Image (cartoon, rainbow, N blue to C red):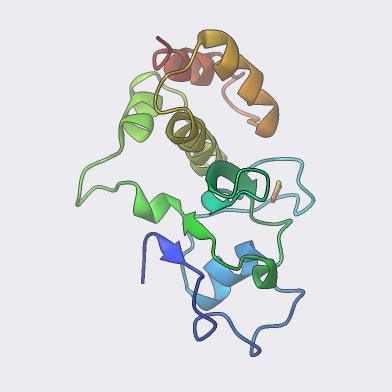
Length: 163
Ligand code: FES
């Protein structure tokens, strides 16, 4: 299993996993999916963001969103579908447009935060059926930190997805 993961089955995540194991710990240390990064481990930097489709208790349907994987216990992910950077594109299978656009706009330097940015933007696009305004994209920028680029190349890259 190396891309989208369904945590519907107790056999996959069951009583053998402690409740203090986060989604980030589980991805990196148990599934060996190291594409998802971490830094602060307190919800402040966005390096650990993954895309989630989960039950929505208000509508009874399912909701797509980005989630800070460092903040969520793996035992609270019943019936979640979690997509990591490994699941959206790579050199062998071809990059996702969000990955490609970020690179084309020079929106990555050291690259450590890039996965979180990509997964945040990917989640936003998926949740809104690729129908976003520049304002919505700007508003999403509170979720991630970057210490290299000054944000402008990332913002320019992602604004290119606006209608
Ligand atoms: Fe910083 Fe999760 S590691 S928000």
